[in-house]
Picture 1 (cartoon, rainbow, N blue to C red):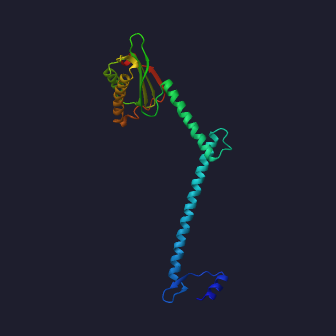
Picture 2 (cartoon, one colour):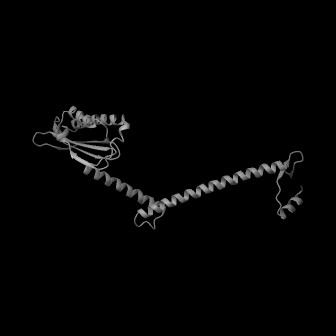
Length: 235
């Protein structure tokens, strides 16, 4: 095919597949097999592009639907762009989490995560003993209370008060006790050593809870919040 024939065919809107003849060093009409192979490859490419486009369209629809839900939850968000909306949602979620934590600490409501807290809260001016508060939050399991009693007794402290609250399968135990530290509460080093020993003792209880995952759903019938003073019951 010479240049004139190619230009004429192009003017008529006829598209032909060409191939380079290595012997003649010129472009010739491609064989039917080559044309069929090219057409099949193009068909696969078009199908893949259509599939990707449809998947991308569904993904955008889901994102927009979720963003619309968030706008309904966040006040005065109609004029916010997506970035501002998401930033506001993150801020409100952090505030809600902080509020929930404060409420939990105030009313001794068990959290979803295992937790141990030990702190010095005051010093008894009469005998110089330090007053400590320790709490442990975990899944309920049989013999948990007896293990707590054994742990408190092993620390050789004077238990003042203990409280237990339950929510579903979660249990939170709070203990108030005193202990005499050399140099009083002002002895930071001695105080930290004692706090570390209490944390280690309570951590052993969490290890036992983790060793028995089959008990995690044991008390699921108890869905109400219950709080009571267990000082006279346990110790």
